[in-house]
Length: 258
Ligand code: 48F
Image (cartoon, rainbow, N blue to C red):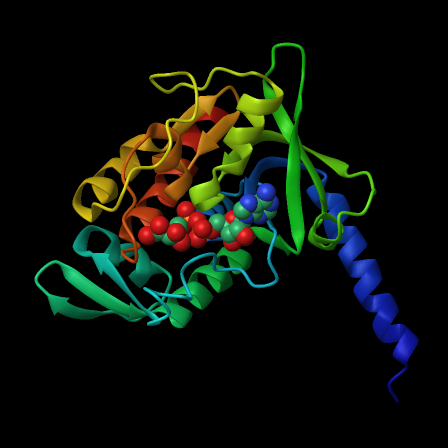
């Protein structure tokens, strides 16, 4: 016999338990795109308490859309090992170019990140950060995306974390909060968000890993957000840089936590 209220209670109780655990974590990641999910996987695999907040319903960010809705992605040779590790099948297209199904790749990243222990909370938007006296970022301020979309006047709640990773893609939303609300100086040449430049895959893909760094005390930037913050080009539907950047963000976080 199935009782409708038991189903409801199972969902509510489990969610509340998991959300309660997420209130204090080691690393809070903003954005469940390829960079955020890769970072979450490599952190959780090392036993780090990592949580990912995603505004949208479905994790994946820009990956399932491939290039202009042709749902194939391209990765370069250096990043193929990461897709292998996630069990995502690739096919060599030409020398350094490998292709994968965009939906399989998104699902693979998501599945392995969650299985490794990186809890993804979808439908939650990060609207602010938490800071203390020295302006160090000490967590996030979150609300339901539905509240944000409906522009309801409902206060958010706070998440404490030792580190935050901004993996919000082109919008680099957490870094924007730092510059607009804290008047903070980011570790960029101008101290501000430099702004992304037009498409140039070759440069963008190699720079995105270098650009992945702690840009403010307690805040690491990863993925397309790293290029937007550092004033580097965009790269379009080649995703190797996102994976390599996510892995690099995890490694920076592990060093900072040590
Ligand atoms: O945009 P997204 O896929 O970022 P990424 O991991 O990868 C970039 C590529 O998709 C593509 C590219 C590569 O060739 O240029 O654009 O760097 O994923 C970012 C995720 O963050 C979520 C957003 O919904 C998306 O799924 N996001 C953005 N802002 C917030 C957020 C926020 N304030 N709170 C919660 N989630």
